[in-house]
Length: 541
Image 1 (cartoon, one colour):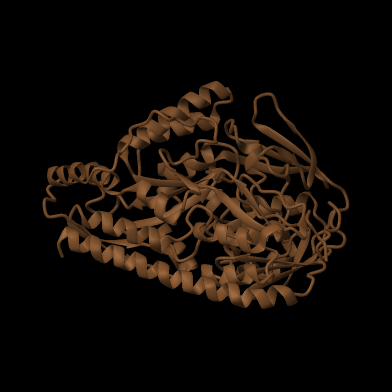
Image 2: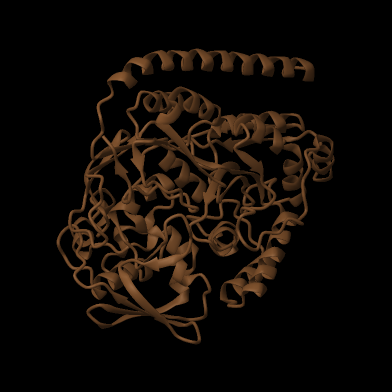
């Protein structure tokens, strides 16, 4: 097909898609008029609509937001973050001491805290929760292995010992200083789990989770909803919401209809095109909670597969993809084109790295230099669920497919259910794959080391580009152990420059995080880490 005819066909497809979407939304508005008028008050029940189901509810081995947003309500960690910030505050540990050399952390636990199964949250439980991930010989190691975050952060090498000096005192000794350590302990994957429940359920613990958090699991209807009930004896105070329901609604239009009908108190990942529709239709009945996205959406090229082991090919693909066109078409203004694999709102960001402008001719020349004058065939994994950093993986994949075709690269789009998608990409089965990341803590280490260090290119990998740079590794290792903030900034800027030259990713977008919330819900605070927390909210009937 000629270039002109391809463009005509593309415009026809876009027009047809928009006509269909307008018709669907019109139908949704008619349906919602009646439903909204008759929707019953929600009382102390809050219903949150999201784009996909959880993969599992064992926080130790989950890295996907759909799982962690639920486990965040079931479990507690030693420390937490002040609402709306990445500032560390006490949680299960009411206070702590750090040695002058930065190697010893001593935590003093709250007294009287209990898990949902009425067993004590004490030093033994804390040690069990960490040693379960730390020691392959631990009796419960197999219950949840592999432990993605724990391994990705290198904690099995960093932590030398975890001991107790009393029933409510736990001491961690590190092999070397690790600047983000305290913040890392606030991550969901570092949650304290019930030893009794883990040893009872072992590999099924992820379906029978027991923590000490503000809510406990009542029922999990797979691919439909997860129902949680308030923990009336929670150490932080009983939640105002008695029942918290996470509904899985993968189709964006269906989720929109449910929101317009008043059946959802809040919803995740609205299509950017739907945001004005919600605002216009619901008026004062809804507010749009927004914040700059602490995230990155990217296309990873698997360097363990040819021709992506050639930097010229990776640079060609960077030049071939019209990132601004994708941001304009898919994100509808609720994102900015990404320069780096970490957001500009994070300290240490380097705006002066090598940039790849949209230039198909440059892409063709680079492919020719790599001996690929006629292009090549490949596969492109498209995300099956909407995420805060990528509202529609299929549309992004189709846009990339079209751009690559212009330079002679034929990309077949493939996809799987969310759990399988994550498993396949972490095991390197893809050629190219779309994915993204929302920061867990306010530190560049959580983006650059986790996503791109060679330590994390070991399967199952978080570094799904399987990019292995000794030069980058040395800098990131040095930055992790450096306690001088200014020196860390310099190191991370240098790291970003190296990454840009080697081009393991096509950095696509930093999206604006948007959560439509019914005004009957008060107290909901956006979190820079993308967490959806409802333990402090209340509902007006």
